[in-house]
Amino acid sequence: MSALRIISYIAAAILIFFGVLFIWATFAPDGSTGWLIIGVVSVALGFGLIYLGTRIKTTKAGDQNVTLQVDLPANVNLDELKCKSCGGVLKMDNIQMVAGAPVVNCPYCKTTYQLTEEPKW
Image 1 (tube, rainbow, N blue to C red):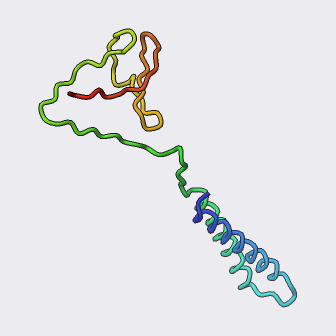
Image 2 (cartoon, rainbow, N blue to C red):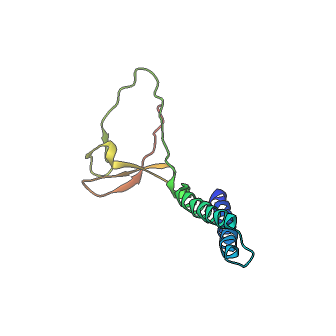
Image 3 (tube, helix red, strand yellow):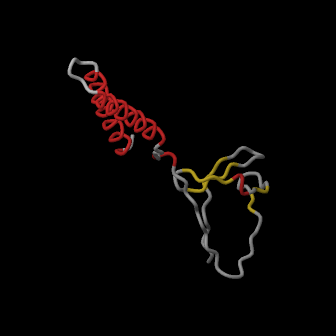
């Protein structure tokens, strides 16, 4: 829960509490109708803060989007990516990022392995 949400809930509880006290004090023998207006406005503001507090978006640790951009040097020819086990042609849908490493899931032989880059020399 975010700090802004907690603050809005605490402020809402205070406004609703004092709003109810003002409404209750209106019906006392020496009460005033002005207190009724203050109480109703205070309660309405409190419920408004609760509504806004529920609308605040919070991000969780698992909700992060990671975009991987690869800069290729000029004149790069892309070859077909083939499975190490069966030699089947793989597509981009068969590659997923798991814990920061590219992992290949072969749809033909169901083999799963980490994609590694071989040295160019």
